[in-house]
Length: 304
Image 1 (cartoon, helix red, strand yellow):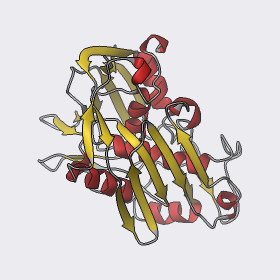
Image 2 (cartoon, helix red, strand yellow):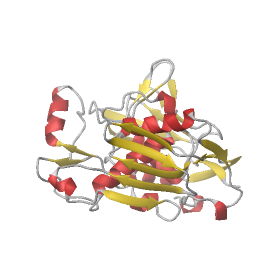
Image 3 (tube, one colour):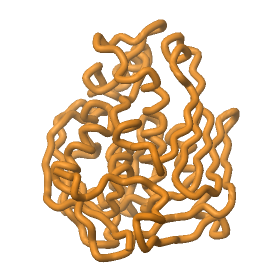
């Protein structure tokens, strides 16, 4: 059977929080089967656990934030959630001494490295997938996203920015994760932002940790980072990275085709909740062997 996954050992990392610009220490710990993804605020007394759930998502203005029943929140969870999804990790405790995760380099790649350093371990419990059985669509003005039935996890994604540097890059792509590798194709794409927006947010005491060390920065005409882009379609790939993370907050890998135009954190979460709220649109499935698994994951033996 295809089994649930966690990590073999605990691993710790320190970085900068995007919003307050302060040092944040994060420890990733193994978890038992059916634990799910739990964020633990160790800066609070007593410590507060915040379970990753679709209906726990609140603020999505600058990132994805989830909140527990007691009102305790954790911000900027989407890049780690994306990495967990890409490696097929179902169960983990994420301890953090702040209200936000470290932004790292603005992509999921450092989280992939940490998780592989800890090692991926299978648990003797079947892994459940959510299989889409009918199309679910959400809209917001000219933006829209939908999940269609498909035997695998496929992303048909389009963005639309008038900025010269983004408009000159590829703005539409189709990735099929039964054959395409999340780690190779998506994980290294960094978040991006406009300097004029960053300056305004800084004046509002927001995004104080944002810099060219953890984002692709743009002025009105060009990319400002001296090293340029990691790939020609990095803007598009990062939007896919975000969507993969946002949709994994439902606690299970999705089997279906995501088709989206100009989607973002809020619309991704709206789609996930619309799917889960319609019990006729999906079903739980399990797989007995790798040959029938429609999503490609890294083998546990390949972890460091």
